[in-house]
Image: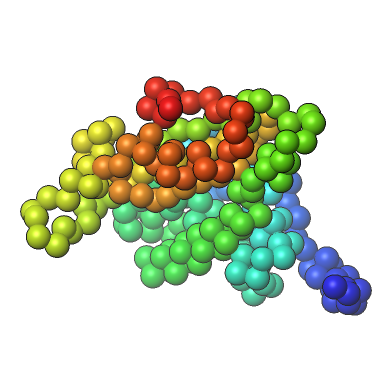
Length: 237
């Protein structure tokens, strides 16, 4: 595939790269920590403040901001008119804290309609990035020399939800979570042992299915014979 260099230069010229420190400074001002308060605190405290409101670290947020401008995934690419750090941070906060509409209005000083519009817009963009972020190493599908015996660690994560309506019964037992004792969705999250990287996610699935059932029906089929997984008793097989 040929690359039009004029288009590529124009795209790169329009990039707005921000450092983790720049992201953190602007974000903390947004949620009530003015510059003087930030300067009186340690870097560890300011990072903790950032995570309390936005979930991710400032470095992760800076990487996402850059990725949304440089990705080759059409649905994830952020165009010039859509480029607004304020709205991206609003999406981070919405995902991590899930505030009521009035709390969100109080923090961001914009209408509920604006909050929902742009929070869900950027959530869609971030979700579209998953295709380039959650990747299974190609060498794990081979018997190539140097591929370790132990590859990954896996665990089931339950996310609370409204109970899906059963067509005939008053309760939907297939959605019942033994972890939270209520309706949930289960997600099987898999990390590489050798690097800080999510390699596989299976879900969401109704939480009535055990971690072992989910493992047998999904991840186990992806692992070559002879390779091993680190897991708790819920996934021992």
